[in-house]
Image (tube, rainbow, N blue to C red; front, side, top):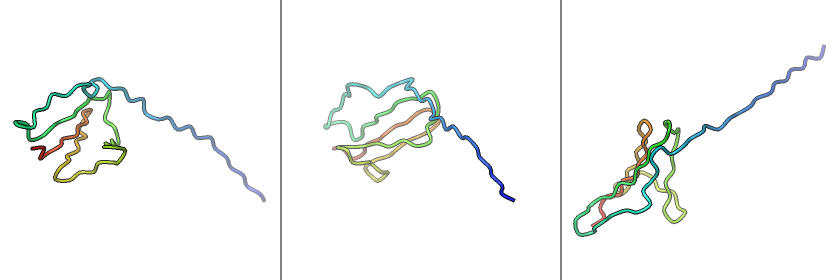
Length: 81
């Protein structure tokens, strides 16, 4: 006996939208600001967020803090002075 089986699977990517985009201009003073926060909000919690600087991915460290809580994503850059 020959048994055959088949199935059809459709995978949909989540429909993410910014409800609060990253700011287009950032006010920063190296004399007074020790850290900088870039944040945005999405219509739902993303599974994963990647941040890049000059096409190189940024990973959590003493300098960079990555936030992904609820619908808010943020990159906090420390030790700027």
